[in-house]
Image (cartoon, one colour):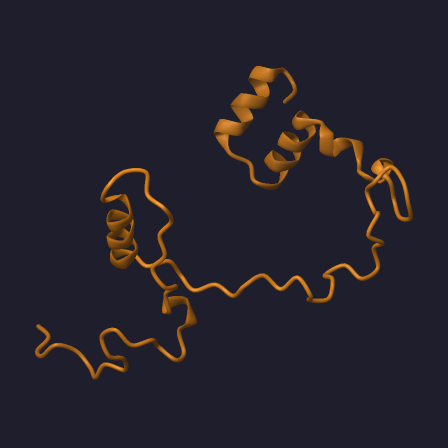
Length: 119
């Protein structure tokens, strides 16, 4: 059955932001200094055609995501686990590839491991 009409009512207005879709609200058009004449205008036109998504500014004063770890965790000095706290398997690419294949087996990765002689 063919559709008639042009769809339902629209919630937004052209050029206005959407209150419940923050990912569609764009950043203002910004250009830096141009190297040659017309570069800045071209960049501005490109940003108007495909606007950059709005992103919140980085919050450097926010609380840490890992409150149990000291700031020096992973370093050779200070509190917390040092470099020895990192598993050795993380440095070995073949071990990582085996773990990936065990979790997500596919023919291409199996052949690659076979060519390496470590299947």
